[in-house]
Image (cartoon, rainbow, N blue to C red; front, side, top):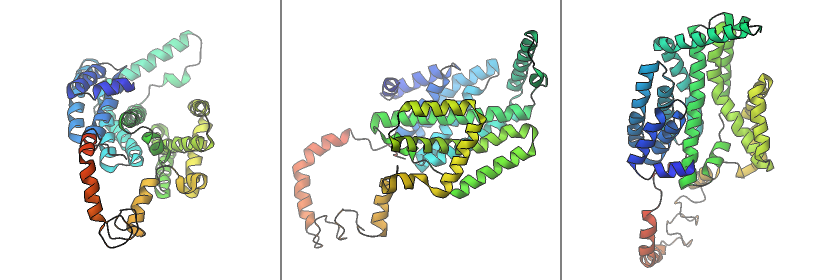
Length: 351
């Protein structure tokens, strides 16, 4: 997949062809969505918007013919999350935005997604008939699902897959231009306590409303689940645990509802105790750049030259004569630096 991403980034036409081809199929739509995220993060909002527009055209045709708007919502949702990440340079805000994408998708499905909902009702009816023919109990499927229930389910699913496509695009960007950067960024994903409490309160209110509103509660819990997995990845990295442990956790989470509740409880505990600080101390993931910025502002190195004297010359004597040395060094290395700088990545937002 890295080779595909590298090929697509070789030119606008390549990216456009791959995005259009993949968005023409429900099976490979995630490739086009992730590519939209990659282009947005790497080349900017304008280029990402152009690619999202071209990728949406076959998806709109597919929606017109089949009534299934899944591909369109996936591409648009991923593009919106990539926009948030590009502008804010915060994966946590992008994860929070996944709940907003899920909510908007649910509202749109409930208002204008009649054809899709009718198709899902038909599928549920056929499934119930098949189970009854086999002599199995299909009591839960005899009652057709309501518009509200399906809208909440589809909205949550689009929020999940949009964020997954965003992370794939961000992983491609890091693999091509900043190896290892995405891992540290994801492991540092954490919400402030007030955000965690607000999301839990919203989910609890929707669950208390009962009925079909419970499918909408998952939207509020989506960012918390993402934060919980980031915490588990940070723990695995700290303990040097292999991928088998993480894969086992994901499988248990998918199968058992108790594991989902335990993960949310872990996020609540982390909001208060900040486990990463306990594990890593000053070296916790994602902290290095913020510490450098704080050092220049709070004290110790106000000019950012690394010597702590504040004169800006970098020689540590405070007289400012280091500028002459810098000029001589720059003259000696100008030719080499000019060639190296042409290939340097200046557009990587490095969230």
